[in-house]
Length: 464
Ligand SMILES: *[C@@H]1O[C@H](CO)[C@@H](O)[C@H](O)[C@H]1NC(C)=O
Ligand SMILES: *[C@@H]1O[C@H](CO)[C@@H](O)[C@H](O)[C@H]1NC(C)=O
Ligand SMILES: *[C@@H]1O[C@H](CO)[C@@H](O)[C@H](O)[C@H]1NC(C)=O
Ligand SMILES: *[C@@H]1O[C@H](CO)[C@@H](O)[C@H](O)[C@H]1NC(C)=O
Image (cartoon, rainbow, N blue to C red; front, side, top):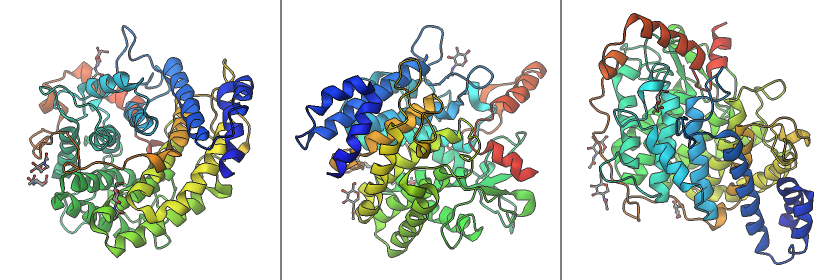
């Protein structure tokens, strides 16, 4: 029925028209579409890794996509996001073929202090950058992904390290009575542009991680800080009464001049975090917030029921922004598991959006690479994020038959460490020893080039 309407273009697009013809013969039994979705997702994922990921080849660095510019299009954080997408891929499809690549990548970028802040990337680290790797470690924890060897940092402890570092005053506005007090800064290091930008993505990531740690460990200290973050960003009106979610504001303006761009990842990070809070507490206020955020997400980011990155898609989105549709689909799907009352609203939108997405998978050298502007109906451009978005869209449709996230009392095996990251010093010098003048200049140049956090462009626009 509904499935049949969209499975056809899906197959035609993902496998090439010829392959799709073979499938038409198989199209009647009702379980088949799920298998077809899995096959299509496998192809899109393999094309992504074969085309864009060199990390497993000799001489390349595991964990990252080519970049940052000018060496390639992608930033460090996007590597972190990719492994989360492929963890969901494994969980939803049962296909383990990419797991060794994912595990190696996630272990390689752990860093010297076991906190997803490795020296190579530390000079330009944003709290949100670090969090996107923590999301993948959290997902590994919740899905029961194979644990690292015992003498290596464990998934849950890595998340706790990021959480603890971001809870520390060094990462926050500490001026007593300041309107942004306790706000988490965008950038980690004071010398970097954006240290004074108190944005939704940094705080939303922290909110999401705190909610998930609370549920996983049954530890309400995390939940209190999630709640406190929600209260902060709603008091600052980064989330308004209609549940529009804005980008952020500056410390110098007391966080009052709000940059009103709306990005789907900001909103969906809050939605998924709220779903964790509701799942744990079943408090009516979380249900209300979920409904408010969800209705607004569908209204703003799914005009015509197809994902649309409204702040940039009329013109050109950066590679950062090109990745948001994937998180949008994945975290909406996850929300249906945690807060089942959202399912009837979410699933039809995910279906129609995915159907539109796969229609664009007709490009590139092999004639089946996916595009970005889904609602146009025509292939536009290939890229790792375009592939990632479609993997996310396809696999998210399988959520109905997948297990929900584990906790440490319902089968999770990852060993935590509540004190991870607590003593990690702040400065690069303290962390890694002295760096000379040459390195310093190098680091500054690096910062300009590789500040990879997704809100960079809009931070500048906000400044102007
Ligand atoms: C850091 O950079 C060096 C030099 O390119 C590389 O050999 C190493 O693997 C990198 N480590 C990480 C964690 O990216
Ligand atoms: C779950 O986490 C709590 C808090 O860290 C710990 O006390 C408990 O032993 C853990 N339970 C299991 C089964 O690992
Ligand atoms: C919380 O999430 C779990 C995992 O998805 C799910 O099994 C459970 O039913 C949810 N709780 C409620 C109250 O819906
Ligand atoms: C709960 O989390 C807090 C915050 O990290 C930590 O200080 C405390 O030790 C944890 N409690 C348990 C029982 O693990």
